[in-house]
Length: 396
Image (tube, rainbow, N blue to C red):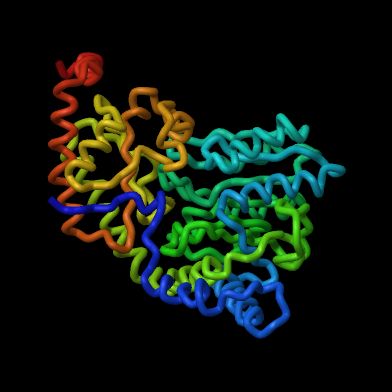
């Protein structure tokens, strides 16, 4: 039995070189960056180096980079900070039905607590936002559009450049949650007309507990975390020095490796997609098959199989996978993303997400393609739902 990790969208292992870069800032260079002595100066210098590393990776300015505790915090800051700052201009926010819960739940908070209004745009059958729907949703009170760069469940990449250019033309701020995309794609915030962007270190082989919030120079938001004067007075709390160092090294290494890793991983992704669709009758790929899909993402609906049961069966064979977002894996409700692209409850409950990464090999993909069809066939043989489905389509 092999051990195969196929849940890189949930989290990644910390790169050993990133960990080595972090270690001195736990024990040797531990000074509080806000202090005045030389030990503190080493901490400050490490943070500023990481800020430059992140900015360089995004073609941004160092002063546009703010370190947070997570991508979720950055998402909250973008939505809440914009509404609080621009309330006199308007209180209408536009987002989509397939966002991460960090955006959806924050949008719900804006509506229920802060008196804002939020429009949740639909998507097409592949999970893509239609620009005409966005244009139709804009009002004279619209202050912010927040559309995720690429979906964490089905991997669909959104038309970010077109959205950014439209928002810039209309004078509306544009935020994108790039937690998944930043680890897989080359992002230039200026070329894409992005005003704000969220990222997370642990999705790109960095440490958990560290995120980045990119804020275009000159843009003023209300602070989300209040207290001391850290991060140029815009994000209070003593800095997570080691985590920030890890973030800087992780994104720098990711950018170096991307030209080789992207085609390798996308090739393995396609091998997995083709193998599953060929070996498992009535398997359905969720999301797009074209270049507008994250290179490491696969998501299938396997009707007649319960997703949670499938994960346990795979785990018994040494394979780690997911039914969707790790943040909602404890929920029995079907994925809101899969429902938004038009799947039935039965199709959504039978979903399987397998996401690839640096450690994925051809041998691992072949092992999955050997094991998965057998598991699905066995589970379907015990499923009344599968029997009913076959009768419905006239195959029994």
